[in-house]
Image (cartoon, rainbow over all chains, first blue to last red; front, side):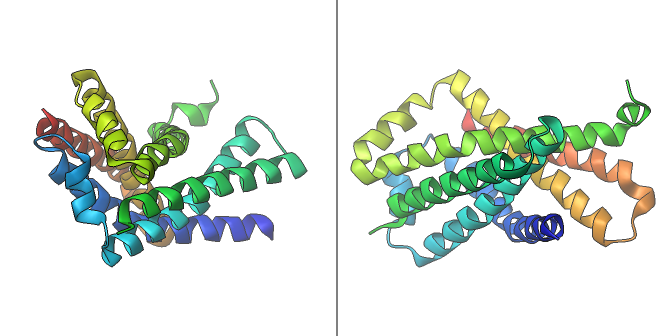
Length: 110
Length: 112
């Protein structure tokens, strides 16, 4: 039952992430020309509810997706099982969620 | 080598898994760099200035390729799990690689 739930969570998070990655790729290709500078990036993102919602949702979905993906790799390639596997999965989820939301806060906070 | 590992679609699976692993390992570093803006804009600017070096730009293009190949490979996976496209698996895998190259090259051309 847990495996089925994780499978569904990974597919749902992937469906949420896909359009957000397309936006991110488009934005990177647009922004990289002429070099990047902090003022230019922050002028676009600071105080913007659109970017806060976009990247906030992105980070939450990525934390779910990546943690489940890492769990699959650890289970299938390193044969981790049980409590250790669960602990590593939750730790990677928490690390990505906390550092990701902190980064979003840093670039969108007015 | 096990027979299934000689299939082209095994390569597509491996590429999807390794690109995902690479992105998962890169993400905390990416988030750390962005959060430098919390302390001071100058710190973030210092890092961005360093990232203008040609080798770093090349590495960034590699990361863009990883992101693009994971996206298009993932879309292929979602399509084959949810749609009756069984005969088109290999074409979809090839298309995913081509699209990722296209995106990464676009990034590289704009970066230089």
